[in-house]
Image (tube, rainbow, N blue to C red; front, top):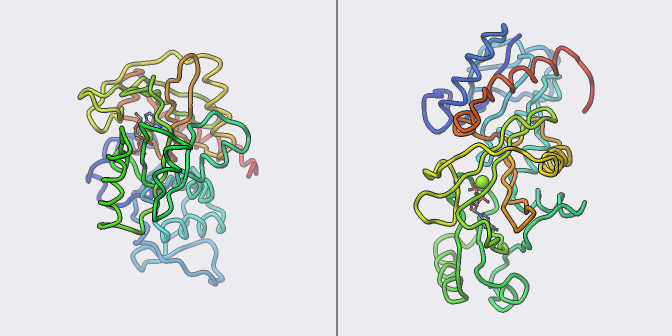
Length: 305
Ligand SMILES: Nc1ncnc2c1ncn2[C@@H]1O[C@H](COP(=O)(O)OP(=O)(O)O)[C@@H](O)[C@H]1O
Ligand SMILES: [Mg+2]
């Protein structure tokens, strides 16, 4: 069996995905799956070719893989999405599907889908310029979390404690990048500097950990140097995350939940979650869970999608 991991760099030793990719290759090899790492740009999309069993990679005609695992998450470009769709049309199974990656890449779109079915999400609104500070104050209030529509590792996420700091941030945005799409979100105070990351694979929870910021910041991302500890999943959280993954049609999902009193609010969902921290915290082999699911899914040859 042959699989391709689609990654921003064909040299996967370039951070930040090194660990995950290396581990998937090793676990794949253990069960007879060969995995190659390719950059979408190395592959040619020729829509009207008659031969639907091969594709051009670096200008060389190459047999199609049995499956692909796109690992570009929020950084998935239009070209990469077009390629994933193309491979799907040629009968290659993608973990996750192009459609689900596209939805999840957009932090507002994923929440819109979850809100529609009544899932617990923080109050969220889309920015439009010129921004009415009064409207943000009235509908969301302060502190407010400001996020770029697409982003990861906490880099596009800000906290404004009062109207004046939001005004300053918006001035800066208007002067530097006025076309950026931003969302404003209710700040879930009980979750300050802390969140719950759950990874699901093929309709099962494979690991959960609490992440806490180590430097007093409100963001808990592991990639920012956050602390991690194993979390024993409750039936309630299990149901919630599996339902989220199902609604967003994700085979593999990294779900961030915010602590909110006795319950939880959904922070965001990722389509290619890192799992280095989770493996450490839970002493689990997440790469092996992914590979086993891929194998099972392909062996069954069920047409569930
Ligand atoms: N509405 C919120 N209330 C409280 N904390 C939040 C909220 N949104 C995000 N955070 C914190 O900021 C971190 C990064 O936000 P997130 O939306 O997950 O962005 P990224 O995609 O960059 O990881 C979260 O892990 C959480 O700790
Ligand atoms: Mg996150």
